Image (tube, rainbow, N blue to C red; front, top):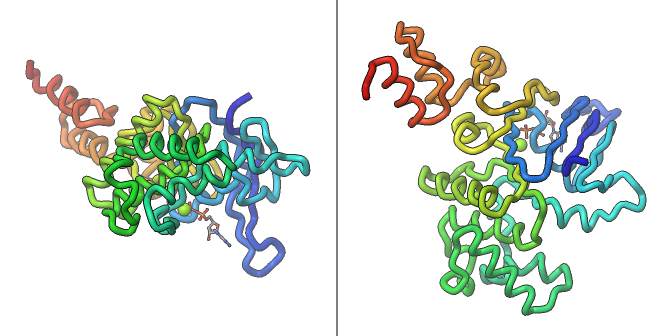
Length: 285
Ligand code: ADP
Ligand code: MG
């Protein structure tokens, strides 16, 4: 069975009131262990609503969800284990830092698991290292003395300290400067590649998706409208534009070169691929 399964998942907020909003409608999705999936869609398309079902912060109003075989709607479901297995990193996770030191912040989850202080120390060290923060240098500092990008990485370490099977991140690069963005996305890529962690990355950036994920799920108005390998999705430039999403900047450039009469392939996701495609037409060697 897949690690994450949503079957005909529907979520209606404030059902039966004048403010009723259908946020998800008949969403069927499965994600296998080891995948790196992007979830993309315009604002209000249901991305945040969907991921909050994965650790039972929200319950379906229709259909069902199973994560690691656990169905939170089941009265006997072990929701605590479910939450430990799904590491959910909210938007602006640094707003949830609150302890006096970086160490204590990352230690918060493991301490709640009832681990010994030795085990807690091991988890703190390992998770800070995973996000590229030196525990010796930063452990005793206040999280509020760090840069925006560092704070965010500490917040992610706090989630990793639970040793989740799947990491779900809601717009992890939002609001960071270009360097901070690149660092955080690089760390996430490493977590997937080196640790084999299953990752579900919510983004509204086509460029981010092109650089990182292998499979892309596109949500629009609460429904999945596309789901497939990222390269195949970006071949549907017109459909994506109609949804208000567009294509990665580098793909858009190739499409413009084509409409200007240069016979390059638009099937390009990175600068290196673009260079190769243009070189082919111009017969560089
Ligand atoms: P996204 O993350 O893609 O921007 P959301 O999941 O936040 O989308 O929202 C999907 C829809 O549900 C939107 O129409 C939004 O207004 C509505 N919605 C989200 N949260 C709530 C809430 N707590 N109460 C009522 N409606 C909500
Ligand atoms: Mg959202």
